[in-house]
Amino acid sequence: MAVNRETPPSEITTLVGREVYSNNGVFVGEVEDLRLDLDTESVTGIALHQLNYELFDQDVQASRGIIVPYRWVQAVGDIVIVNDIVERVQQPDTDSATPEDDGEVRA
Image: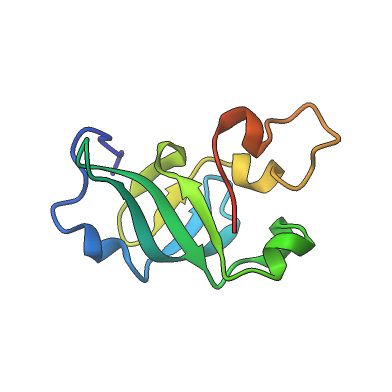
């Protein structure tokens, strides 16, 4: 199911607890909470915990989790699929996009 960014899921709380994978099939984490913009009444990010620490550096490993921008979400169903940019976040020495380039991944 593709994500319609204009219409969030009817019950946004149903996202909590779902596993999150990159579009390459790599486990990223589990949805713990959502970040909302109350002015626009929209979901702006998903807070993940139980992370795949192979994807993230030491700073993230010492934290509770990360927030992935909702615009990176590609599909929502039994699981959540996010853009594979999450896999490239820890590799700033390449020409790949980093969190500063395309959004926010933070503890």
